[in-house]
Amino acid sequence: MSKSDVVVIGNGFAGLMSALVSADQGKKVTLLSYGAGTFPLNSGVIDILGYDDSGKAVASPAQAIAALDAEHPYKKVGTQALEESVKFFQDVVSSEGFPYIGSLNEQQWVITGVGTLKPSCLIPESMQGSKCFDASEIVLVGIKGLKDFYVDMVAENLAKELGNDKKYTTVIIDIDRKGARDLTTRDVAYWLDSEAGYKDFVSKLKGHAGAGKVILVPQVLGTKGNTVYKKIVSDLGCPVVETTAMPPSINGLRLRDVLLSALKKKGIRVIENCKAEKADISGSKAVSVQAGGEVRTQTYSADKFILATGGFYSGGITMRDFGKAKEVIFGLPVVADCVEERWVNKQLFSNQKQTFAKAGVRVDETLRGVDESGNVALENVYVAGRNLSGYDFCFEHSGNGVALASAYKAAKA
Image 1 (spheres, rainbow, N blue to C red):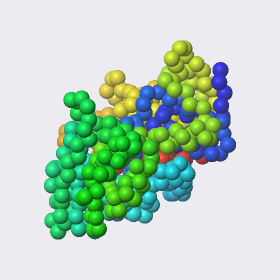
Image 2: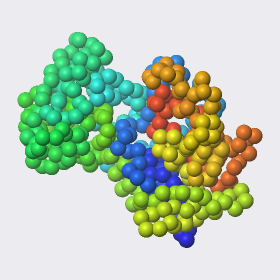
Image 3: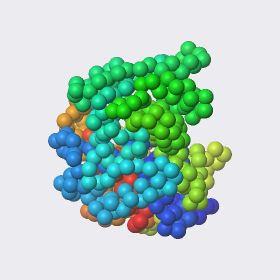
Image 4: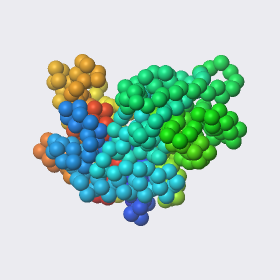
């Protein structure tokens, strides 16, 4: 049996941040990791709160959070912990050479892979869409054979967003690839990591750079933090901006690698390919969890457990029979409004939150699971990220923000 001060279950953003904050307090931490996590699907930007309940873009996340319902995770976390979590995150990524800009007081704007504008709170330097606002010309770069990025459509949509007082120029780069299959953003990013690929790319863009221009590229500027971004801005002598991307998200993978590097430096023990299956409970406390590895099931005991296994999307919560939602490891109480007429909006991109998305573990102000009467289920089990009830991360654009804030609060509790 392995004994730690803290066992974190889950290797998504909430799990990694929970482990980092716990280790920062001098705790011996074990992280149980299963699968690739959500990072390949994750934009890697930190949306704290993008839209209010009416679907209107939020100007100041800090101000908008004050108006949220009492059951929202941000209300359970509290303003102080949210502010501290933002600072902690920015300190971590900056120390790893991958700084994020932004604050809780204003939104940043990123350009999506289809050419629309999206509000976010904390973003890497390469994704500052606001650099396009004052440009006289935007040079939009397409990559021949790149899947899911259509530069003409991006140019058309961006002109609608920013206005026709700018010049929009499209450039197609052929990276002389071998083979017939379509390219992914990861293929191009690896190519730009190489010296030959980078030199070829820059040489083909040099003639399009200049004063008053912004170079807009798909999310392909290397896989290693902001190394390629800093170099290309210097070499081209004008702003360069990346869009968001369809999976695999290069920026999500950059963020994952940065956080894993920080985990390693903190001495956090990461058990890979380790699926937590059930917990051993004694009275009002969890004693250990059993997790299956490559060879056999192991037992991991701790004084404290942080659950960050996700909601319905990742199997942290299941509902095999409608109306009977279940948290699968500790059996924590799950709240879900299981009235069929209210369960889902038939319109996918609705102007209202989806009821099913708000299902999750109900928690108290320390982020421990509670029943309908407010009684704590397990004294030493804390919940972070998508396991939490009371919010629709997709509608609100709050997924990584809730993950960050709740991970920080759960680790500090």
